[in-house]
Image 1 (cartoon, helix red, strand yellow):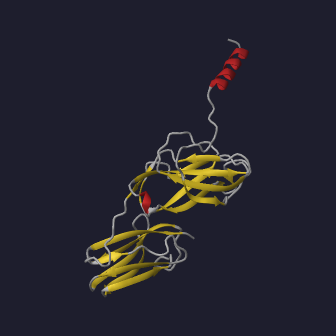
Image 2 (tube, rainbow, N blue to C red; image 1 turned 60 degrees about the horizontal axis):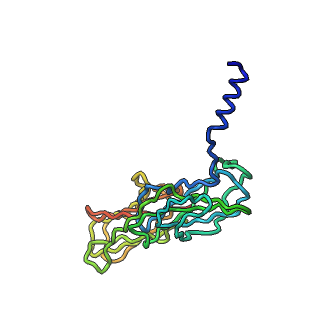
Image 3 (cartoon, one colour; image 1 turned 90 degrees about the horizontal axis):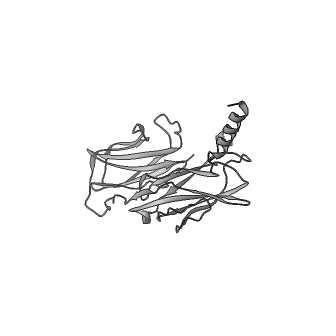
Length: 248
């Protein structure tokens, strides 16, 4: 077989192999299979594959698990808006890379309590000056019902309340209720690895409503990075834990 024949066969092989075109926008997370609890603050993250005069971003969710192709936005839904007209965080003129690396956008979403005991998908629309492009979660993620916390009117030793605001910057207030005087109460901030970041209260505490403020610093007074943290209230040998999100 001569060189011309070999070249022709190679060319034909290249033409016959299906070429996969890159997506215009790609959901990174949640992309299916995750499990959250209603009320959780979830980071929705997506990236640009191909940029076409991007104007803004739109995000929706659905509890309908449709298999319809959504590349043109024709998934059956119904879709409920999470946030519309999110401005682009970077622009690169035609590719998925900005000067600092991949062009990734994030949005912090508090999962509504109405989604408890459901499976959910996310859809992101690249709103362009001409054709719009869509991507959605490859598979649904699960939303569990939140574990109910005892009311202050219920005969419980203590109640740990949701920090307010959450997400927060630069500080948040953590409230709690004690039904009786306790010899030892500890309120500690932890990172996602479980390591202690800062102790807010450590000692005896009187019955009633109490609170502490966390300003996003560690024990040395140094500001910690944005991200998910946990606060733990310990009364003797009993513990309660909740999640907070710091956004710089």
